[in-house]
Image (tube, rainbow, N blue to C red):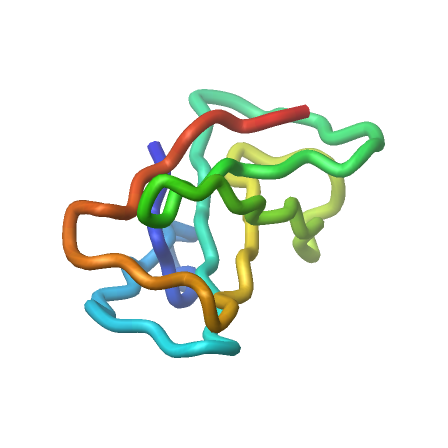
Length: 97
């Protein structure tokens, strides 16, 4: 499960969705990717493909305070000036390890 999120619920640990509908240059898009069990990120630079108007961008993995073991991985992408798309022209590709 992939969620564009703004923060975690302190009580449950669930990702709370980011309901923004527009983004400007410099905004950060943070994606919470939830797995069925704990995963371990051992190295490299994992990223999540974010496809904006047909152009693939990389949301990079960010290790949280939980350490390398977690059922939810966080990926962050910073919007750049050339990222222009209308509703329906943004999608998620693969997680690249």
